[in-house]
Image (tube, rainbow, N blue to C red):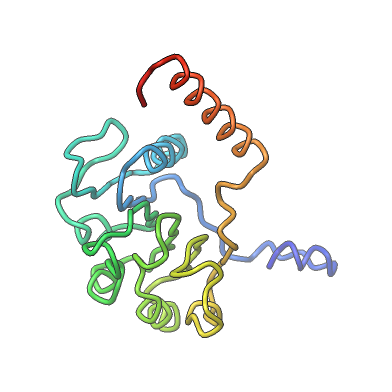
Length: 187
């Protein structure tokens, strides 16, 4: 809004802004990527809580016993879940009802972990303030995927890991694995 205003010659200093300091980030899943997200959040002075069925402690987050405990006081929620029978649709109406702060939700795990109908409804009535995702039930999502026409969303075409630098790192790692296997090593 302010960017477009500047281009039109408008000086929109009264636009509401927020900062990360003092806000709460909830992580659903705390593997390698989520741990790096937590480190960055801590650098901004955020409180970080996390739920992961398989992890009981973390040096970068306060672990909580349920997804509901994680999201209840969250200002931001970052999802890093694998797709399993248990996680499919996990972020649906029941979990949305637990959110008390109208959070921003970011899903970089698996698309089907979010119930798209429930998320669309929550965005529409303001219980969720924004939803950003790079993952979908299929690539590309079906034309009738509800979040394609929802307001307050940022959607990208599954390109989160596709930077030139990351693709080079992946290539280097693949070469290192092949070298190790050629030398008789194990994975």
